[in-house]
Image 1 (spheres, rainbow, N blue to C red):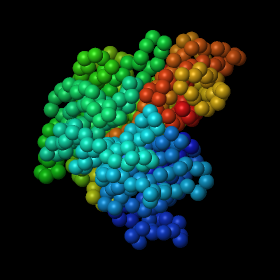
Image 2: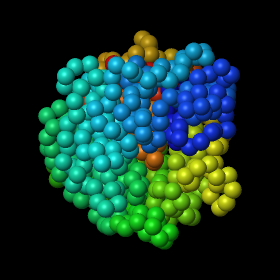
Image 3: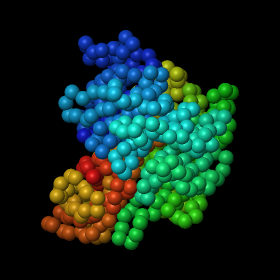
Image 4: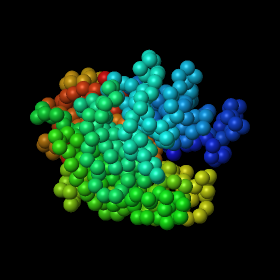
Length: 498
C-alpha cells in the first residue's frame, strides 16, 4: 500500500490494480479499466473520517512518489503497463479531483521499487528500481530531464537477493544526495553524476533495503546562528544475508536485525555508531515526530519482505530519543493488537497522531489464517497527546506576515498557552512523506533558528524565527509547521516554503 498526506489534510491511499476486485465499488457509470469496476485508490479525509473512491488506470504496484513545490502528488512507475507512467493528483476540497495520467511524458526507464526525492530546484529525482541502474528527473521539460543516467552504485549494491530496491535517499544541506543501498552509502552529486565520497560500510552482516527491508530517516536539521547544522542519518532494522532466500524458498524465518546505525555525515571522517533496539525488526516504518524523536512502528521479528516471508509481528512501537545517551535512547511503547506486516504503512498527521494501516503478506486478498489481509486504518497517539500535557500544549494562532515562508527571512508565529516554561519553545517544519514498503520518501524535519520570544498577553506569545537557510536545507513545497513547547507540540498549520 502507498500513502501520501496532502496539504489539505487528506490522505491519498492506493494499491496495485492487478490484485483482483477490491471491497469498494467505483461510482455508477465510471469507466472500468479491464472491466474491474472496483476502486484501488481512495482519498481519505482525516478530519471527517470519510473517504471516496478514485480511478487508477494503470498498475501502481510498488511505485514511488513526491509532492511537487505546489503540493501536487507526482507519482511514478509501477508494474506491467504502469511501469513507465507518470501520474499526478492535485488536491481539492470537492469531488472534482482524481488521478490524471500524463500522455505527453513518460519515464525513460522502468521504475518498479524506485525511490523519489524532491530537489532544491523543485525537480524530482527518480532513482533505481528492479534491475534498473539509472536515475532520471521530473518534469520532462527539456533535453536534460528527458534522459536517464547510469549509476554504477546500483549495480555494486545488488546481490543474489537484490537488497538494493527502494534505496534510501536523503537530500543534504550541501545540496548533494546521501544514497544508501544494501550496506553501502555514498555522497552523490546528481547534477554532475559524480560520487563525491564513499562512506564506510555499515557494520555487521545485516542488509537494510528491500527485500531485507529496514528503514531510514535524516535526523532533524537544527538551524542556529552558531553555524551549519549537524547532519545525521539513522538506519534501523533489516535482515541478515541469505534471510530472503531462506524465507522465500524454504520458509525458514531467520531473526531480523536488532541494530540501528547512526552516521554523522557532516563529520570530516564519518563513522557508524551502532545501537541496539529492544527487539529485532524488519519492515518497520520510522516516523519523525515534531519533538525530534523517532517512532519505529510496524513490522516483524523474523523473515523479510515478500509473500508470506515473515512471521512474529512486532506489535510494540519503539521511541528513539534523538538527544539521549545511546544506552537510554530506546523506549518500548504500548502495543497494538493488529499485526502490521508486509505492505503496511505509517505516516505523521498534522494533529500529531500517526496514521497506521494495511497489511497483506499474501499474493491475493486473504481474510483468514494467522496473518490475514487487513484493510483497516488506526491512529497511534504518541505520548505527547496525553491530556495530562494539555497545560503545556501550544495552539498556533497566526503565522505572519502569511503562510508563505521565504528562505532566510524572519517571520513570527503567535501561539496561546496556559503554562509557559521559559526558553523551551521552538518552531519545527516537517515535510509530509510518501510512504510505502517502510520507506518515507522526502520525510524531513527542520528546526528553525529562534531570534526571540515575545509575550503578547497573559496567555499569548510570539516566536520570532528565521526561515530555512536555503533550498538545500528545505526544498520548496508545503510543510507542517509545529510549535513545540517543553517537548509538547501544537497541531500543525500548513505553510509553503519558497
